[in-house]
Length: 224
Image (cartoon, rainbow, N blue to C red):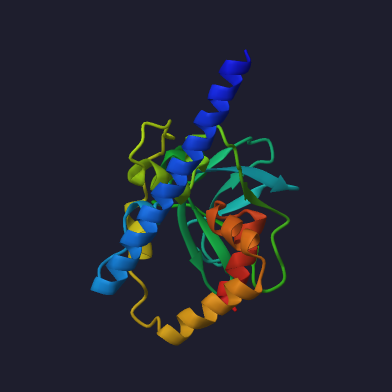
């Protein structure tokens, strides 16, 4: 038993080392991409195509035909609904922070329109009484983030790799290339902010699905 326990301990330590090496390889490739003016590595910019959410609050959640509070309400999500599938696509405007529902939810919540949108948070100070909150389930492949993607693609070992849902191509491609108006000064300001604030908080906020407490706080900073 002791020999088996010792072997498993060494195996776990080796797995951690292999995972760290995969992150270093990704970092080196990312730096090379930036030096050559190329898009960042695809695994680094992985965005899940489907993210699970749950109802939070009291009452039904309105589903709009587009991200606009003046748009048509095409459906309702009852507080009896245990889980809702959404995309990683979000929109921000003068109303607030919007989440686009997955096409698999069309028949349930927006049967007469091409898309369904839910207001997660309001910038006017009048947040909805009920909204959707991301489900963080370690056993669910749809809750995995870009870190698993990096390990899966840059690890040279035979360590157990997580199954990931298909990536959201549109969202991933947006992350691979910086915005045309993004300047080195803005990048420096962002780096300074990350250094002055709690790094574990930042790391977790970026890995959490949209709608979680951490990602909403990160969104508030970006919006400001």
